Amino acid sequence: MKNYQLTYLISPELSEEEAAKLSEQIVSFIQEREGTLDKSPQTIKKKLGQPIKNKTTAYSIVLNFHLKPEKIIEIEKNLKNEPGILRHLISKAPTQKIVKERELTAKFFKKAPATKLKSGEQFTGPLPQERKKVGLKEIEKKLEEILKI
Image 1 (cartoon, helix red, strand yellow):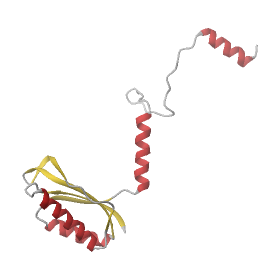
Image 2 (image 1 turned 135 degrees about the vertical axis):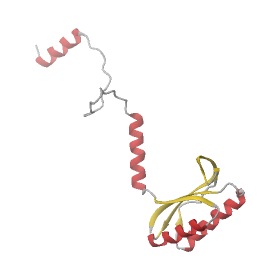
Image 3 (image 1 turned 30 degrees about the vertical axis):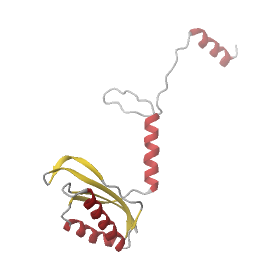
Image 4 (image 1 turned 60 degrees about the vertical axis):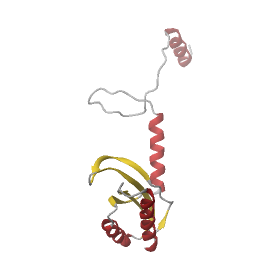
């Protein structure tokens, strides 16, 4: 079984109860094909960025589930034939390892200081740290320590 993510938009002409029933039908259709859901879906009404089939709002639902790859075609056909669904997308969901790597990368870039490069210059090496100004006397002391004069 592979991990999939189904995202679909339900027509706003349906009431919330009808949208919830349609969502339950899709969940039961997946479960009939020996699929297992990760968590129960939530129905959220959203404003669309662009009109889809002359609709500016829709109920948005995201499902994460496990299913055999050969059963995906049946689900795809069922979703296409459902008149209440405006759009749908089935994609492979990222594994836990990939999710953790993305979280670590996001944490690193939030903490890393921004560096300015000249146009055409590429960054290589560690990130520069802020330097504090050192006086001439401090430099002479360090040299004496190093050279042991």
